[in-house]
Image 1: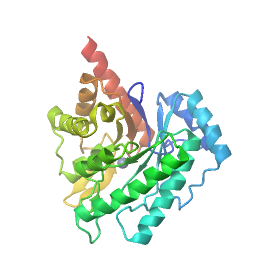
Image 2: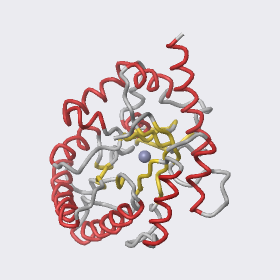
Image 3: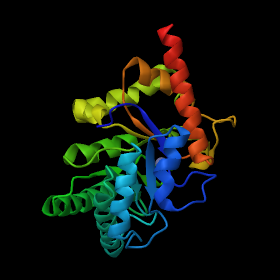
Image 4: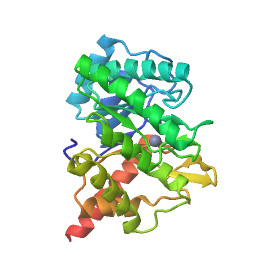
Length: 285
Ligand SMILES: [Zn+2]
């Protein structure tokens, strides 16, 4: 459980060109304290060597940076049998690297409905998750699987589906991608109440344990009737409005880890942190 609201980028900071090992120090200097390691373009085996990962872990600890890992975009736990098997292998490899990195969890997009009904796709995904959880238990991994709410109606991963998956397993918690939910529902976050409904759903499904382990993705997003089109920066005229989410977080003393997926990753993570700090300060006055 995060000890405070934490912020960081999904991947390398935009102006960064040093060795990967100095990312935690770089983030600390920016005032950030989280990092989502991107294994997204890797194949079955994430190219993380154990020795490297363990060094990275000590750098992250030294600089107080919370680490998570984003799995490959090729994962589809609701596809045909062969595809599901390969996806399971990809996630297993990620889990191992995640354990070495001392990361909290593996974040991934669960898959696509394809020609299946949402119900069928969901059931197939559950079976795959079951295999993964069994693997984690056998290995004694102390990490979580975090299926993410997805941004297109063709993708498995509505908020309700993600929460229903998490309900079934102790080691599975949601990644709440606000931009994705927003794109899927045609811009449905307008008031504090709209945001609060998501927290209420999480608590109803997973109890206080779900609220204790909040993991968010945030970016502004452009969308169409087919869902997300393009991630946008906080300065561009697209929603959702981070300020309203920040208010809800402060008022309810939530402690999420907030990962910026904006086109200017860390720069918008800093902006979000500043928005939250500024609101906190105003409320105290
Ligand atoms: Zn995301």
